[in-house]
Image 1: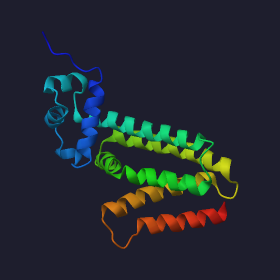
Image 2 (image 1 turned 180 degrees about the vertical axis):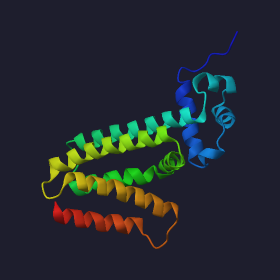
Image 3 (image 1 turned 90 degrees about the vertical axis):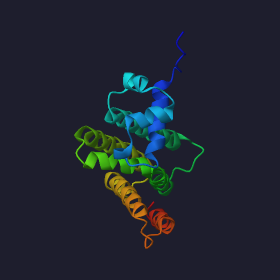
Length: 186
């Protein structure tokens, strides 16, 4: 009699791949390593995923969907201070907190994976529209579209500076000064 497989095997595979991506370049992660770390057979892994890129696509979708859901939940919580400066801080801090996975996604997309590149571009556009609408609800003093793209670009820039271990760049000081500036224009 065959051993029962857990119902959530795809989630186990994605959790394992995401965990491996935290400490390893995507190019060094093999399907065999994912299967071993997930404690499943390679056959089981191949049943669900034929390639590493398919796993990366699903990890990407799950990651971006989670960010989307959390942003909506945060902005719609009436008990939270969701003023523009807090919204900006929230978006930037969330992006920085997931910098490892984001860098892997950028790397694969920039090195020629057109499908992943297009997926990221579409998600940036979706996030930009959502964040812009939330900023527009909270202030009339700034162009919400421009301001949102600025937030997204600053987030990516901080991720790059932190990844470079640029000691001349103080992330916390930059965020603090940015919040002070934004509060003045609210």
